[in-house]
Length: 174
Image 1 (tube, rainbow, N blue to C red):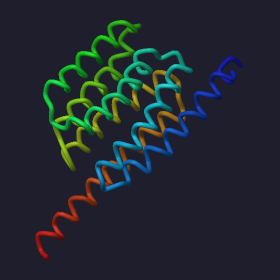
Image 2: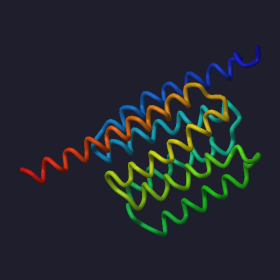
Image 3: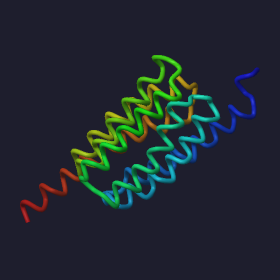
Image 4: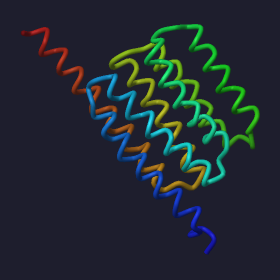
């Protein structure tokens, strides 16, 4: 029963911590709170992917921690975004194991663009598509908790987009 090894159990446990952090993050209507909580969640995701030996996903998840910190300091800064996109490609090239790494790479690239260049609902749309890529990456890595986490992140993100849209409509009528 290798699938129930200590490493596998730890990976599942860490992914549940990431799940809790992400749900709270995406339920927030404030972008700054979203970013801070995502910092901690991505540390957990990077750890989870490392435990499952999914190295591209682990490396990109670790880079996301840096990306979130940079985007908070340099929003809409194209040069910083370009460096993060390049770093994502370099990490993927150095740790590439095959086609199963494509979803993590796509998620990393899309998330980087979305966080640097978009705000509000458009940013959350980009992050929702990235979440679908992360669902696939988690399935390929064998992460039950990560798959549930990213699926719930997607759903919570969609609900938050609807809430933001409703709030915008209410402001227009006020």
